[in-house]
Image (tube, rainbow, N blue to C red; front, top):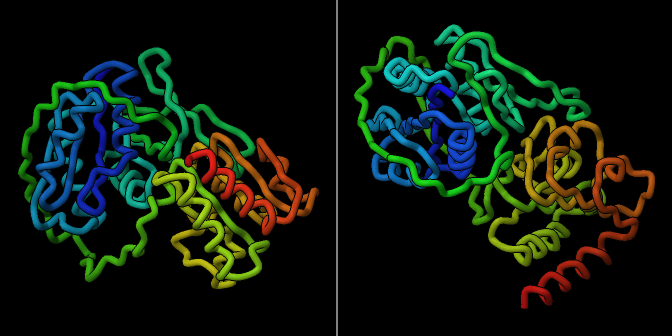
Amino acid sequence: MPGTLIVAEVQKGEIKKAAYEIASKAKSMGGEVSAVIVGSGVAALAPNLAKYGVDKIYVVDAPDYKDYVTEAYVQAVAAVVDKVKPSVILVAASAQGKDLTPALAARLKVGSISDVVDLNLEGGKVVAKRPMYAGKAYAMVEAAGEPQIISVRPNSFSAKETAGAGAVETVAVTLDASKIKVTVKSVEIAATKEPDQTEAEIIVSGGRGMKGPENFAMLEELARALGPTATTGASRAAVDAGWRGHSYQVGQTGKTVSPNLYIACGISGAIQHLAGMGTSKVIVAINKDPEAPIFTKADYGVVDDLFKVVPALTAEVKAIKG
């Protein structure tokens, strides 16, 4: 297979886990794997990518890239694409990745495929598996032309350590400032030690059945018991009621997640919510309504009062972990 270029996103001074996942997948498909990191003060992070099979890392490091601005990042990545000439560009389907992918595709005058959950090689071309109709069906999609630009849903692949050559090259990009129409004044990041929902391996989510904001402490306790890769989430109903901030919302109008384990507590399972978490590896539903739509999607269902089940589950997890 010809070369693949990974766009490695940096947040809070670290490369996001999703970059390692797509790098691992690219390595498994064969061909040379390169990566680009854009930011300010990010050069020291480059060697981390070599652990996951990246052969060449291009670093665009300058104060102009301290904050993510679409046009500036598109110019930086496009400059590296022109240098590398990859056949495939992989980007994590994070909030930033979903913004960057179509803009980069427009700049390069090629198509893009968004939010895919699997990649396969067929006849030397990458074919992507993409959820459709709120996750009710999947389409196998191939982008015409090169490079194929594909954004991949976080947690779709495992990050596997496989040594790559890891050669690092700094790329100087002269920005066309006349095309940059936006200035970032401030960046507000939720003050929490929990992992971001899009990258968490376990999510404990609450809905209308939680009855009030104070009861989400119960879900937080369960998430802590499950370990550092667990976090909490919420349905739109809980967010609209003001019980949780929008950053916790899972669903079509919130975050699309794909954890290894999704525990839905007091969530009925509206189609908009299922669209955001339907690709979770294992889904556990806790709801006292046996007719709740969430049970049609769940791998395991508990028909009972969540205020009895969740504390019991938390106690059991703590007992098992000692």
